[in-house]
Image 1: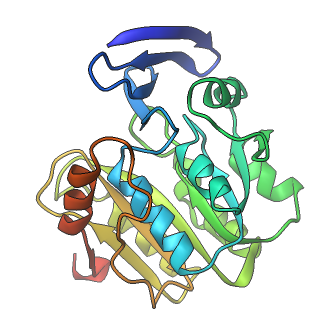
Image 2: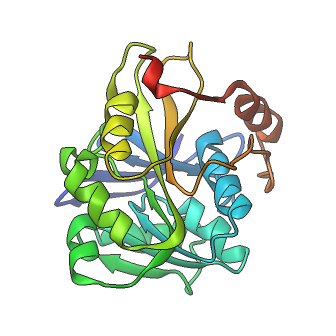
Length: 243
């Protein structure tokens, strides 16, 4: 890979790479890939396409995202005329996302802690997406019942919360533990997962999510579209209560 830029930030070193053969752009923070996109800013991560599809299924128009990285989901949603606000504690991620990942100027970017933003801002949203990591783990406070309750207060009546969780293996308790906390806040909580795969992404869906269907690849990237469609097909909704 070809390094395009490296920055030492308060929250770790961020390096932007370009793959030699495909030209895709990678956002790396302290050795963890946070985003990868084609040259048009469309994500190459199957879980991002799953979240994108879920948001479109529910007709979400006003969306809050906690966690930026390369901002690929925000880019995809903005191009579909959705109103998107992105919150990230690292303000430099916004500049990098605009420079290398085609993040549109109409996406509102707020440099803040996700919980503090919800406390200080009374705006309400159709959906809240949590995709924030320290290394490969979600910060502990974003997994608590108090944070989830605060997020619920900022959702419209038919709103939903979607959270990306990195899962090391089938015995990793992280998604089920968070789902249990979410069930104290919302009546309906679902997990969208791909059991059997190591180092995968699991999506927690809470709120008005009962009618969600299997996602499809609505916005194929310039490369890896077949692989992403296949990965989406390996995922399924599962009952977290069975564990």
